[in-house]
View 1 (cartoon, one colour):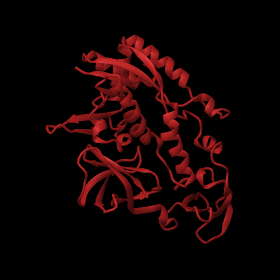
View 2: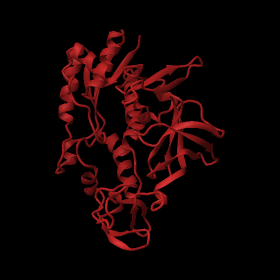
View 3: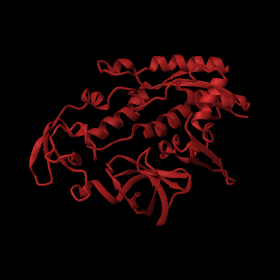
View 4: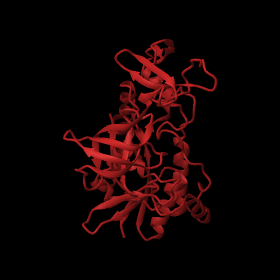
Length: 359
């Protein structure tokens, strides 16, 4: 049996993860990662209920009968996640702070804090599975609940992180997790799942960015070069976006979408959402950089599976590594709205191999 520190968020998933580990005989402690301060979000409208999260996490730990603590990671989180988010949007990219949070914070600094305190690993409420191999290495697999599988968010983890990570919920359906929580009379058994970017809660991303990136208005231009209106700043838009453009369509049942962001000229290009009208929005080819592998790196051209976004189904790809540490990706099916900065998660069947960042 192991001495494990569970990252307790206040939600039902991490609470059930802690409960299952304790029932299995492990020595389990719980910790809430404080990564953001409400006062830093003021005066933004919206809800960032970290105080409520702490109350729920502490109550769940007491019910389970395990020690509970709060670990203050605000400064580290600001440095490793918030600045990454802001700089990404400032450069016209579409960053994924949740994936970076897992690599740098939860399975990075939080894990190291746990090891320094004598724990042998950490556990989370992710819907993913762990597989220990005969050679001593560890793989991460998709969660069995296809609707809740969260392996995508673990795509940039390393082998040293995976070996020390435990995912008790990976073989369960969400409905089973709720039932376990109800049967154990956990105080958060019926609590709704959190939504949105990890540290913002219900605060809209554009409201947050407005306080950190000044508006830089520029033209909105269609494919023929006609200026249709003006945008407030390229950081407010991503490829494929339709809402928030505030430009009228001259065709019935047709809507403009973003097809390109030209940083050099501060121009937002739009077109109607069809491959013929918006060829740059649809593609079968992409390039990724900063590849990260969970176990054995892929060094030769091969057929694999991949996810472009969390909710997207897996799609077949031809993966061709290059000498720069990146790779060319040929999708078997046309993809829409691949934006620089997004994360590609790479799989071999149900096994998560790693991930890379779209150029």
